[in-house]
Amino acid sequence: MSLPLSFFYYIYLIFVAVFLFYTFSNVYHLIRFGGKTLSVLVVSSFYIVVSIVMLGIAWRYIGQINWQQSLEIIPAFKL
Image 1: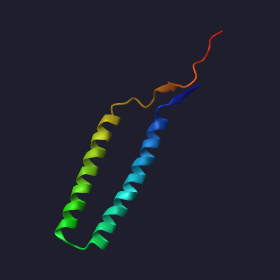
Image 2 (image 1 turned 180 degrees about the vertical axis):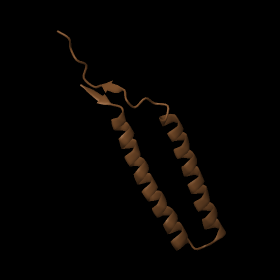
Image 3 (image 1 turned 45 degrees about the vertical axis):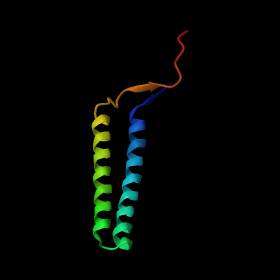
């Protein structure tokens, strides 16, 4: 029995979507309830820049993987 690696890619994309949802929610609440001060702008900008850098690095490494390969879960016995 084998499992395609693309299965893990789709799980990763779901995690990225959840992360982006929480990121937008977090930045919205920072701006909405934190006031429009310089410190809120700096913290929000830093958070967004670090998130973009992390996602960019992950995307770069994930792009090098051949997602068409299969992963053997249970090896098949040949009789």
